[in-house]
Image 1 (tube, rainbow, N blue to C red):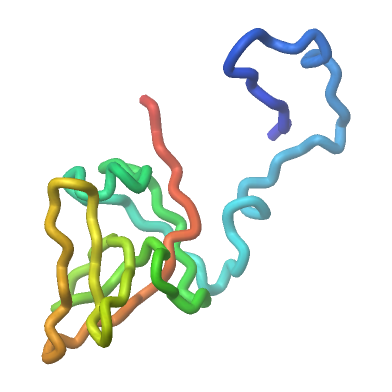
Image 2: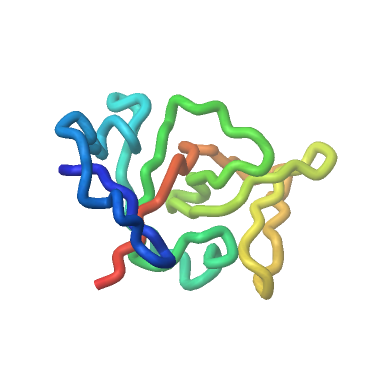
Length: 126
């Protein structure tokens, strides 16, 4: 796949000139740790739109990254996966969504597994 820039204004006259080594490898660009990387389809009901994730997007999830506050994560909670922003308030885990959706303050007696970190997402236009 050729790598070239797409101007969002007027195109550059130099755009016709590219080098053969200007190849774009999506595996190299999107997947840092192949054995720990999983692909998931977003089904967020619009709750992650403020964070750039729309329903149907392809999520590239890396299980080798240690999740930190502010990361977009996949959590496994009561047998199901959820995509949320991870925050910590005191000793409590908070899972945030877009505006209009209340944050989820995870009760202390609930077992929650931060399954992986969303490194990127691919949005399909067609």
